[in-house]
Length: 77
Image 1 (cartoon, rainbow, N blue to C red):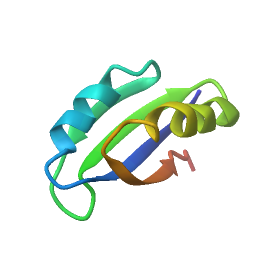
Image 2: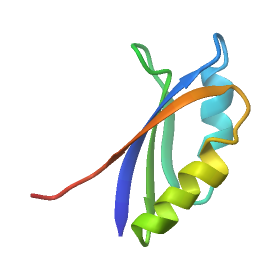
Image 3: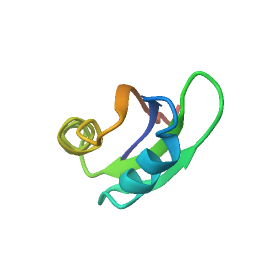
């Protein structure tokens, strides 16, 4: 299982709506609107890195109102 945090910047005033939509995507564990340089923080999981990439590019980044994403894979050292 591969897990990652996806940090999302949205259009002004769209964070809550974006988080609600993303929370419904299969593979998304949590999606919360936050304050700071990013507007939404998502925890996602997939079976492989490739599946995680497809989740981010094909589903998350297509949500209306998103301007930028940064994917941070979780590592266990």
